[in-house]
Image (cartoon, rainbow, N blue to C red):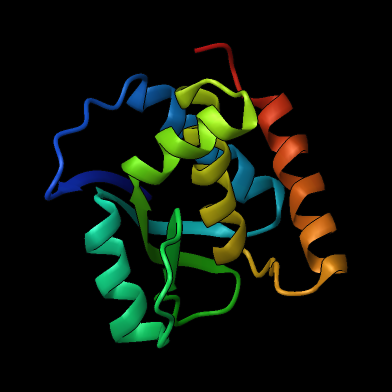
Length: 142
């Protein structure tokens, strides 16, 4: 049975509409032709994510998200997605978005990484943003 978990690590964060988010993510993954096995979203601080970035990716920069793809079988999705709540709040203010909208964008961004989408080159970033926008527009009202 597919599982989507939401955890907190060194922050307190009250995520709203978990059932609707799970449904939206499951539908997105199925629409891309994949089978959801398990995703864990871990909400954390900037410093927690910075330490992960240094330890696992050798990057010494703050980021809003790090995605670890743990899938072992093709076309299945298993992974851990770490999201900095501090970075979400700062980016929302910088981009003129609500905190909820920015969080949903980052949540779907992580799922898209698990589906094989990348964002290193300008062309990849463009495709990723198009997919984010597409699935954000399919999101149920919540």
